Amino acid sequence: MEKSGFLTFETAQKIAEKYSTPCYVYDEAALVAQAKKALAFPNAFGLTVRFAMKASSNRAILRLFDSLGLHIDASSAHEVERAMLAGIPAGRISLSSQQLPENLAELARAGVKYNACSLLQLDEFGRANPGAEVGVRINPGLGSGGTNRTNVGGPASSFGIWKDYIPQIMETAARHGLKIVRIHTHIGSGSDPLVWRKVAEMSLGTAELFPDAVTLNMGGGYKVARVDGEKSTDLAEIGEPVAKLVEKFAARTGRKLHFEIEPGTFLVANCAAVLARVQDICDTGEGGYKFLKLDAGMTDILRPSLYGAQHPICILQKTPDPAEEEYIVSGHCCESGDILTPAAGDPEGLSPRKMRRAHIGDFCAIGGAGAYCASMCAQNYNSYPASPEVMLKADGSLRLIRRRQTLAQILENEIQDD
Ligand SMILES: Cc1ncc(COP(=O)(O)O)c(C=O)c1O
Image (cartoon, rainbow, N blue to C red; front, side):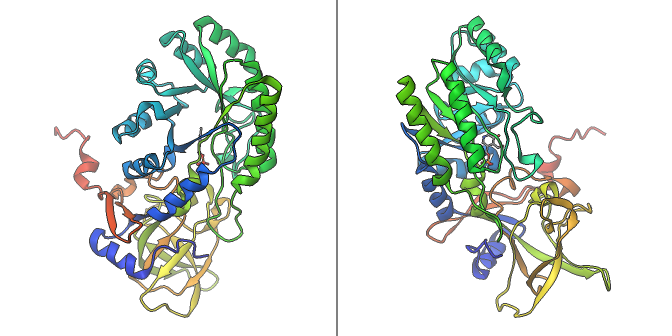
């Protein structure tokens, strides 16, 4: 179960002395290793790997991936600006957004690559940038995802332009003189190889209808196992058949499509842990549960409460206690749903976890916390400040990459005129 192996007791102690707990800790060596694996994704005629920055948006991580040759997938105009402020050139950023950005024309002029995610977005883009190049995100009618909340393809999903509306895309593009240069899909976080192949076939079918399309973007969704029993996506297994399809497409049409992927989870999920401390231990008597209460919770890691996501949890002690106990690990929020050991896929169910016997004050490392944790938590609930982020560098040194938020920062936008 202990997958956050990069955090030893000694490192935890150093981090706690310098930055206190709770604290996110990233493992630079693991980030680099994941980036290299993604850059080796099978492809026929060239590959761009975009980091889906929604997974973890800290400047240090964006810059690290940029230095390794990754580009950026942004999900809002705000993310685009954040990436540009981190020094990422606009031309290396693509934007696929649920919300129509207000500054669409400006972003396009700066060189950001835009994928219209609805017919309205395509029309608005065309109005603002007649004659420009643009991508379209298609909902291929199929999805893949560990849970309904991470599946973003198929009829129950509003992401992308529904597959049957190709004539409307053509009509809108023609009206504004737009060139459709990218076909984009992202079907969710599950990456079943068969679904992926099917979606690739459909996307290539779509690309065939758009003679200006030079890029096929298949999105992200490559799963990584955080705990035993979960399966990681084998990038070669899903990528190789698709690279062959792209080759066949070229043989048939004479068009050598450039390939893009935009992983988030794959690049960062297992490269970080939340370092917390055991604050309290209580139980609800015979037939009840034993609870470990931490100084962290849904304010740092929301995925268990939201999806019933499973994260490895490890008690770190100077001298490991040889005994084991079963605990429900609960967060520090005044919210019964702030549970770090829910039943798998069922945020309302409780699943006691066997782990090393814990004592008050022990460190507790919650692994698999690199993706959708610092960037997607119940920030400031109960007025807890956002936790700091620390990079454990490849040479073993520590670098603070985000300070702990202060109460003054939480309050700074409140009007104090009474
Ligand atoms: C358009 C798009 N691309 C990429 C991703 C990254 O997905 P994952 O983190 O599962 O790889 C997402 C996630 O929601 C997405 O919406």
